[in-house]
Amino acid sequence: MGSVIKKRRKKMRKHKHKKMLKKTRWQRRA
Image (cartoon, rainbow, N blue to C red; front, side, top):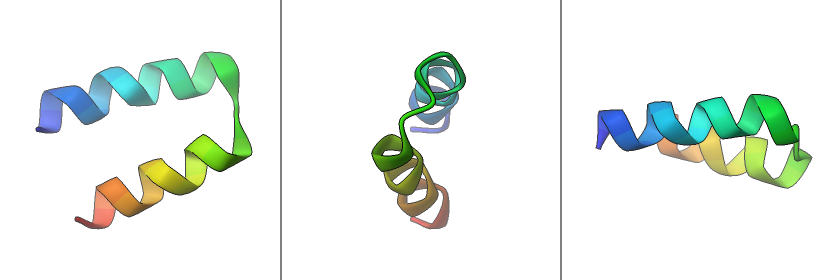
């Protein structure tokens, strides 16, 4: 699971979607 979050995080930096950032925060906690 850790590798999947890292891959998604890289995409977040490119897109910079506020909604997506909230999802990543939830995943970090989980």
